[in-house]
Length: 239
Image (cartoon, rainbow, N blue to C red):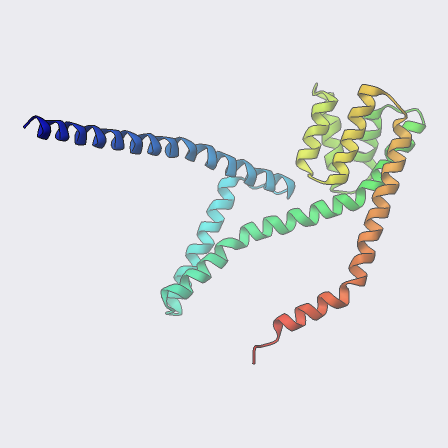
């Protein structure tokens, strides 16, 4: 009898330990879910900011859900297709708003990257003429085209409203995640701390960016025939 009672007690202890372990795991998962959702929401918000769209994350999510539901109802209710095809159409329709955001973001960042050498040349000429760095940023915002004009104008406005130049440039690199623009931000921050000829640094950086873009276009021209052949071969039907 004593052995039976001991076995029962050990079995109860094991069950309690397993239940505690499961509860602890569920609590950790529930606690990590808001953090993951917040991280994804912040990432979507950043994509909308970089695409320069006046949308919110809720608008984007609702648009995806509405298009997905409309595609599913139209495919299953009107066309009388099976569930698998309706689900595939709904997923494709739900992806359209996010694809539009990503496409607009990539095109805007590519346009900004092309405008960056001219902006750096304008800033270096302004500094060489005796203007302050903030005045050079204002010149870029006033004289250049979008989208780079609005970005540098926003930096100038942030500095005027009391934000430090380091933080304003860091915000610029977040709004426009371009490698060449980050080089510009790092060069300005290092020059403010260690000193040096910022005009010469900006001139060399603009020339380097131009050479890199020229090399990239040359590579695209040389590989155009191969890429077109790959597209044609991928579109051919299997025999």
